Amino acid sequence: MSLAESECSDGMCCFTCVIPPNNGHIGLFKSMWRRGTGSLNVKLLVTSEGQKNELYDSCKFLDFIISRDDKNSALKIDLRCSIYKHRPQQCRGYPDSAGESLYQSMSGPCIFNEYTASTAYKHLVYKREWNAFYAIRDDIGVIQDIFVTEDAHAARELLVGAKDVRLATIQAGSKEVDYILIPLPKRTQNILYTSEKHQPIGTIRQAYQAWEEKIQRNLQNHYGSEWEATLKNAIEMEEKDAGKRCHEDATGNPER
Image (cartoon, rainbow, N blue to C red; front, side, top):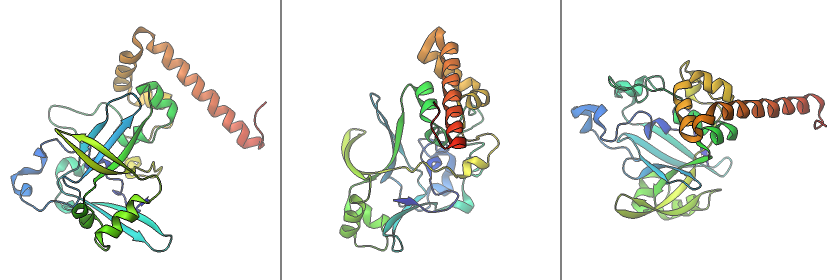
């Protein structure tokens, strides 16, 4: 599975940062426009060991399309906004105004940058490492809408047989629903990185300096009065590991 090479191809903002639960940002007129193929049928699943799963709905206007790439026998995912030229202001300002309103502003890094951050960062801030998946409802009609050029049954076999794709039954509201889970690729090049406000998380020190308010609150919740010592130790350990890797790259041999 691979993502199409376009600036919005990961689509995480269409599940998390921008869209209020009631789609209230789109206005009455746009609410009557057609739904995208991802609406109702594709969700974002966030999981981590020992924690409750988080399931995010997609935006009403998200088109989620999968096609066969005959050149390398792979499947390609393409996520598109079906009203891109008429998208709401919150979407136009993504990522710098993602999720912001008159009453609330973002105080920390957006979810995609945290997803692609190092294990050291996630263990410190969340005390766990989490994973994200596209969750497609396992239904022939849904799959037919997503695979526009394939027979639905053949398309399902292709999808289920793809690398790292798995099946799961998930509690969605009061019902149990069967989903096909596709791991979200951790891309290093993404539109988010063009933002001055939401730079990628390179190191724990850089992230803390940029988003002190949010990260400090997490650390205080996790570690109490020991949070400053824990942060210092994590930064020192990360910088020591980085220095060791640089030495190995320079010499071609492990440090002794």
